[in-house]
Length: 275
Image (cartoon, rainbow, N blue to C red; front, side, top):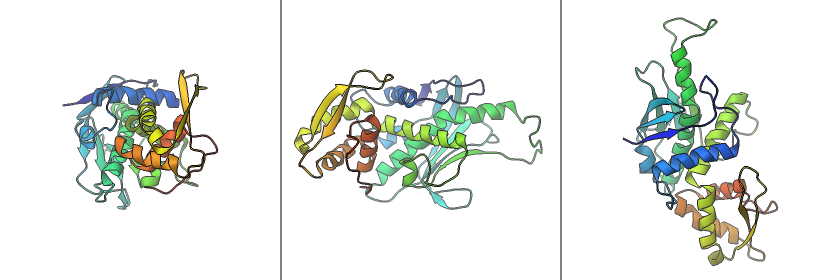
C-alpha cells in the first residue's frame, strides 16, 4: 500500500507558502525517490495508480483513484481530470479521477493529467482537510444542509502547458495552485537531471550540439547546458521526439521542460503543434 511522505514550507493552516520553482522541484524529487529508482526515466501510469495515500507535512490521508470512468465538471462538461476532497465522505481522502483517453497517445495524456492532479493533492488537499477539521468560521454558513466540497479541474491539454487559459480571470490563489501543480507535474515526470542525462545520450545522434556553462540560478548551482543545431532544420525537434517516449510523455512536454530548465537558447524557434 504505497504512501508518499513529503514536506514543504506551509503556514499553520497547512496552506503552502509561495514556493519557488526550485522548492517544487525538490518535492517532486522526494516523490520520485519513493516511486522509482534513481536511474529510471519514465514513471509508469500503473505506478501512480497504485498510490494509496499521502502524508504531507504530518497530515495523512487516503487517495481514491479512478482512471476507468469519464470525468465531468460541475456543469456536466467532459474534462481530463479532477482532484477533490469531500468533508462529508466519512474519511480524509483526496479523490483523483482521470478520464480514460482512447487514442494512440492517450497514456501520455493520462500520465500528465494524473501527475498534475497529484500535485493538487500534495499542495492543496492538506489545506482543504485542515479547513474541514476546523469547522465553519464565525461568519460561515452553519446550515447543516450545506455541503462544501473542494475541487480542482483539468479541463483540457492546454491546461497542462500553462497556468491558466489566456484572458481567463481567476483568483490569485488559484493561479498559484495551477502553477505549482504544473511545475510538480513537469519535475516529477521529466526531472532536470534525468532530462540532461538523456539529452547527453541522444543529442549527437540527432545532430544537436551541447554547450556546457555555469548555472546562473543560485538555487540550482552547478553546470548547465544549452543546445544548438546550426544548419540542421528540425534537429532539436527530432531530438525531442526521441526523448518523449523515454519519459512516457508528448514531444511538446519535452519542449516545455527544455525551456523551463534553460536548455534551449532564447532565440530558438518554438513549434506549438502537439505531437
